[in-house]
Length: 547
Image (tube, rainbow, N blue to C red; front, side):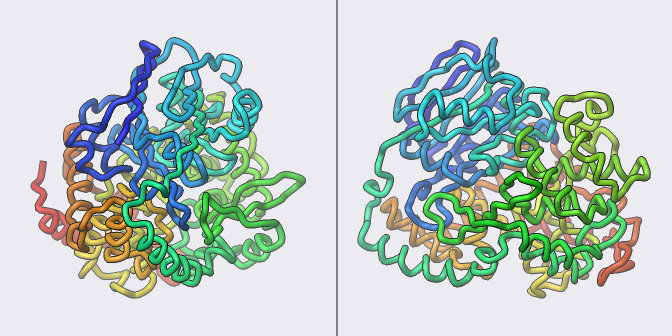
């Protein structure tokens, strides 16, 4: 495992082999956490890949970014699909460790196993689309780019790292970390044949054919509709946050689904992926990658905005400025609610610009909802599943190492599917631990979440098989879960060193106090005794002690 180590302060780059403790954690989130644990600093950014990254197979294009979140003050990991991670693997690296603060804006240029830091003052002030276009014009179209826009430069707490005009390391503020380090972009080109390194290529080919058939069949809904397919499901359950967390049902869902069919123009896939869950949409003469479910929730139902054109424009502006749409939409919804303007889509574009440039009221809004003591968990704004009608999601949100997050446990899935009663505490903690452990491993492999969903195609047995044929290992299902558990425990250890304790594993009081409004979960709150029961059981199953 080769690691590229970059010192921005000294403007030095070097290549080293992964150390034994780093290698132990497989790759991706695991190796990222292992490296980060040696620094615990806000001027550290790690891009990390897994042993399957770059295979010509659906779901194997992801890259993980690990850093200290400016929103939570805790360790964060955010992943991105597309092509950046694949190119980094082709260049010969398992991880890139970037540390220190440059005295001027720079680009990290990686060409196979060589790297250099270049002056980026001419790009400072440009948005992510302009930045990527100019870098490719200078370096060549083969280069894959991860960069920040004005939001990252201006240290907006929820700034993201953008790639390929619509793929993001989206959550937790990685763009602000890059901005604080004066790192405008990373551009990478590689020529290695990733599949030539596979230990048992013949067996891999057999597994690939078998798994691809199941993936394409099992994820047909994502291919056809993308992530917005969840809108009517969540809305019917009465847990689609609406009117700044007042209701659980949004009356415009059917209209929005119809409008999506009109503006969707073509599918978009990550490298070698046959699912092609991405959708390119055209509105008002513009094209945007999306809008995804979470963007429609945050700028649509949460803001009480029914006009899909407004939602799509907000999506595009966030992409160009480089902002996480979940956090940005939550902040905008808070502002609209507090000023009595829910449903007013006209002011959204200008408000987003003020946030990105920290102008006027946008300066304080750029700090995120923690600044306003509003609805967040550990400082991270909450995604589009109301915990009052999803007990598994409630406990999942509360204990997640990165704060208000659904993707690290996807407990809304088994809750909505009826695998466990979504209104009762029984069985939630046990299922959460199992799911987290599995994803602790798959996130270290950096496998796309969609192909590993509960009741999905690639579960413990299949993931172990793939890992074995690629690396020559002999992992069992138990080994997968054990290694994943080690990664989860490492994240907890790091966060405790950063000041986290059990008292931080909580929900906003709002969800205990205020009953859900309109919808099929009307009148529901999270019962505090039920929540404490789930939390106690979770700690017992984890073997954690109160700190």
